[in-house]
Length: 318
Image (cartoon, rainbow, N blue to C red):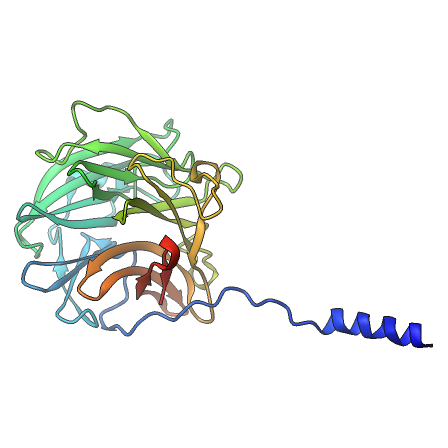
């Protein structure tokens, strides 16, 4: 009898033991105003104004004075961008802009494509102020076709620790690529025609996109989005990261798994009513690093912003 009771106690202990909870993530910080955005990119202008550009017809531009209240002020291409139409199927919708500020001007890399297609191109525009009506088309930077093994969308410009310019990009298929950029033109560097591979998911349907690279404390951190966007509250997007001592990689996750072999450490994923957070963009501000991203609600995509901490050399949002 004592044996039976003892066995029963062991069984009950196993059955009733608390199940480890899934990772708990913070909700996005407070943002107000026009925050129905997709694929945000954010910088702080020299006058202190926050400028956010996002996917939309002609690419939407929003501004904020406090990083909380955002208002839409117009589009990069209010009269359309006819040079992109061969890639968009005639649509005015342009994707995944990447905004940065260097040498007294704003640079904007952006994508023209249609959903699921590799007939895609990344273009460059520049402006002295980033406001509507001030942008100059600088032409195509890189393109892919239906026979390419990768996809030219989701660009991100990064300047390395030695002042070199690089453009990462890519979505699905063979994953994230990178080319060296000539700072004088914003196009591929004439002295380096290499296309570097940074991340791929050969055993997960290729579901990796939206690269964003930063440099901090001797490491380059490659943030990407795993899984699937654009499915409303059924979206499974999540933010992952790896790091490398070299801008060209190899990038590995916290467990040492190469990102070219599916590796990645999770930084942010669905929780509660926040579904499919991803297409992240990072920015160093006066109060530290922050990450902007979009997530889905029952009424569409929304802007999320969180600060980023670096315990042990790896990022976490708060």
